[in-house]
Image (cartoon, rainbow, N blue to C red; front, side):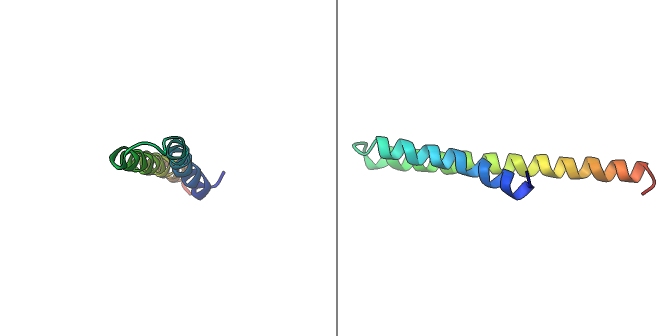
Length: 71
């Protein structure tokens, strides 16, 4: 899977879960609903950043391997 898709899926999963929780908690007060939304966005961003860090690590390892092979 391409890096862009990995990041996109990592972000979408927690955000989609937050949307699901919001739809199930329509009777919750405004503060609770806002907290659920912010939590989903925050977890999505964290997951996306983790995927970016993994991709950067993979690129560094590939570059290091190329350098050690004389390429």
